[in-house]
Image 1: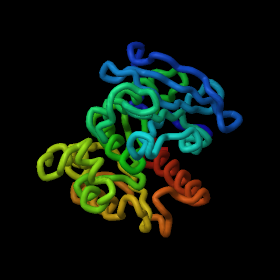
Image 2: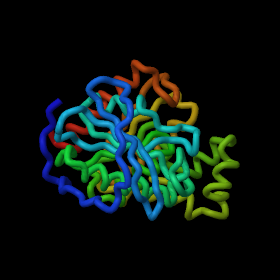
Image 3: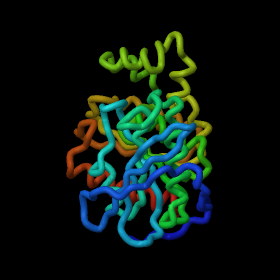
Length: 276
């Protein structure tokens, strides 16, 4: 796949003080290279997968923000493979406190820096292309992705896929998650600011890049209300966004719909982020 250059946010980043180790590991597909990367984030050693097409590039860059917490929703190589097969160099942080990474996952708290540093590190690789980086957030990862879209000047577009956009709404809807949320974030009545800081709908006015919202009308883990609330807020703000609602899919799409969704995502990136 040939990608056009984008002069908007393409400066290469100096990340010589971020990388600790980059080790080649087995790939799930021929023509795709995979690495286990250890890097620094606020003094912690954090790990993630880096996957890209073989060859020298340059390749457009994408950071994938996983959902869940701890061992729930772990990122896998097959999960990010569709991005690499479509020509991206993609980095997927595990987040602190997971799979040997130091620290503690705060569900969109200080772990946001694991994403910020991943953006810088990815852009420092010699095969990284000049286009602005795209961040994808799946489920809870949408909190981290939107925070990166808000705070990282290298990010040129954000994708919210089955994403949490209002953490208080998650607390109301997901009774099974309340114990975890109270332990990690606190009770929403006592820690209102912590819930707002983890809710993109509360600070969408500070996200100045295009946003793609992808959601199923039958999502059993994150209700469609999250997507609609964010879309309504972006509409009110006059922001650049697109909302795609998929019919009848669970939280994790079927293989066939997953391929279609990735095609939709790439088409949006080329049109709304890279201006091709």
